[in-house]
Length: 189
Image (cartoon, rainbow, N blue to C red; front, top):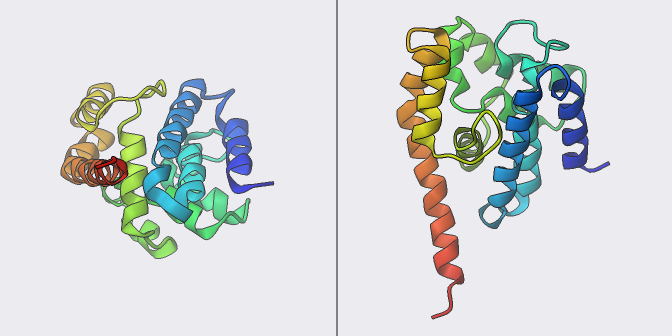
């Protein structure tokens, strides 16, 4: 079974029944990842797999710490023996180190999981932070506003996302710049 097929089946098994909205979001993030294939080269499949798996740590079947990047990555590493790069992307998706810090889990996250290559980290941030909770496309500004409004500005998630906003917007701009360059390069003269 291929990496992406396995990832979709696993994510669906963990999210679709208990968390259908989270499953819809994950499908939207994966769709966004597929749209980046012109700039991802050999990492396109890896990105799509990580995108559909990024939120499995919310699943009641595997949530242990309450911090979904850590729970998801540990499950993928320990129970699924998943590709190490997918595990690292799930562990660190969307500036997870900052949220881990808010939760007192930064040291655990850093010690257990290395960061993946910056272009992949940017791409997964972009995919997650330009997809609504229902799986439709948006932009990073609207997505961050939605997160702060949903959780509240003074909650752990609200504080973290406000701290992460500059890096999230910068990652989105870098990805959009790469997409624009590929598009410009492919235009006939």
